[in-house]
Image (tube, rainbow, N blue to C red):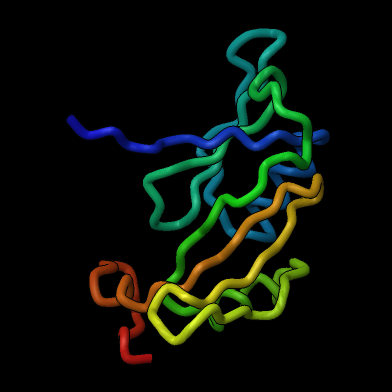
Length: 138
């Protein structure tokens, strides 16, 4: 049996501001923004190429805004990804390398509520990604 991770709830204070940040600054695709019940609003966004989405809204998460820490996005070229976010006005950390092996390079950013994200480079993904235009060599 497959157990797939499909949705991660992101606790936010201002749903519209968070939706706009993840869509316009981070580049996630807006899947839907709906009110399935009068007291529940669900905004779901998916990173390009991902099988896992994020959800936020009213009545979506009991967590306090800003308490989501350690969720990671994976890219095949960390320099390109970091430059894209900087160009979109996102404050990001410097690239940190925890060694020479593939998968050892990271940078970090926070959303407007202080939820913290990591971006990890795995160059080997470029070999297998059907949408990638880069090579794993670099």
